[in-house]
Length: 524
Image (cartoon, one colour):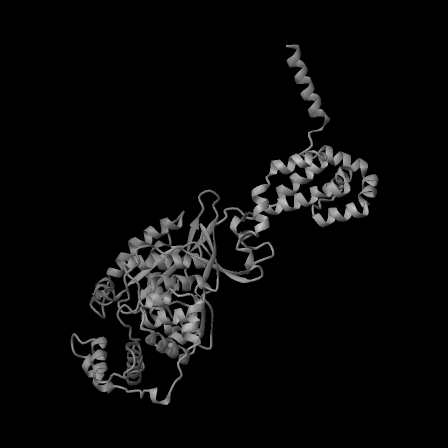
């Protein structure tokens, strides 16, 4: 996805600061500010801007990047944090309302998310031992339990280990637990989707650990996300802010939740025998309700009550359709105007040969894009080593051959030359997934009979079948040098045995049997 689109989405849909956007996307804060100014100058709806192609966005935002003028720099204005603390101690007061009041007095005041961050720093200075401050509906902390649950295969008796996904909402501590067969990206995202439906909404930010299903790299404050995970986040309009490596305090909420889940749920299941992950999830759900309904002594409310009060009203609404897991690859269009994916080929218009393209695929479809524009759409092949070719992607001469020729016509021509040539044509067509390519090779080989004669082509066909080489160049070279004569003389007996056993040659026994049947019919 375009960096510009990602910046605008995080800025205006997730209300993140420029610094947070820099961490998540790798785009500098100055560039984020420039993109923001360009977007404001456009005065266009966000959805309309996000629907533009990468090229159109580049022309609007990069080519006409606004220059920063010293007069445009605004002085940072900090509120009186002592006053803020006193105001927040009043019953019913919220940070959002307080920020809005300060914003009215000082239009140059920074964003609400920055306001929250500065206040948290102030509180920590007063009392370093104070727990993290979590905002309503803001963050969902995600991790896996180190403790697993055995799953017994009823047929083989083999034992696998179910992975336990745990996520905790920051403000209320409301917890969701989900068992999956693995920690793969697909199962990791599946657990997120289940969590969103469990909560009935989506938080503003996800805070995962740095596992490979979520984060490719997290170095020097620049995060590279797993593309499938990032796509899921874009679908639900949620930001991803991974915990810093070796900084457990960034996700202390979920680490405490994991310990509690191990104690109150997983330990209670240690004597159970489970034969499927679904069966395990049913038992987890029964115990999870009890855990969330437990009264937290310090707060004198259950997590369920706190969720309804603190987090639920602030969650973003769920989309009507559930997210479909997607995977992403980057490939080069080969000389056959196809890209390879999981052992199968998918065609693109031949004019894109040699170009790098992006492949987005699900269990049912494959979409191929170039610079953000879709150039091909195929159904996903269910078997490996099969190709999907769209006729309009072929060059014009291929299309004409595809429409004009067919296997029957080629075999009729081959039969007029000889049985070995027929066998060669069938072998070529059986080995080629693209009929047009097979027709082209077959026509080229059969056309040699006009130059070199049927007898010569039949002799070369025996060699090609013997050495399993069906290339047009190889056959043409044999015809030009007549080297097939030497090969046929030295391997005559071997070739005869091979060809008599070839699946396309019926042999003398077959015709003797047919003659016998015909005689019986005449006699009767």
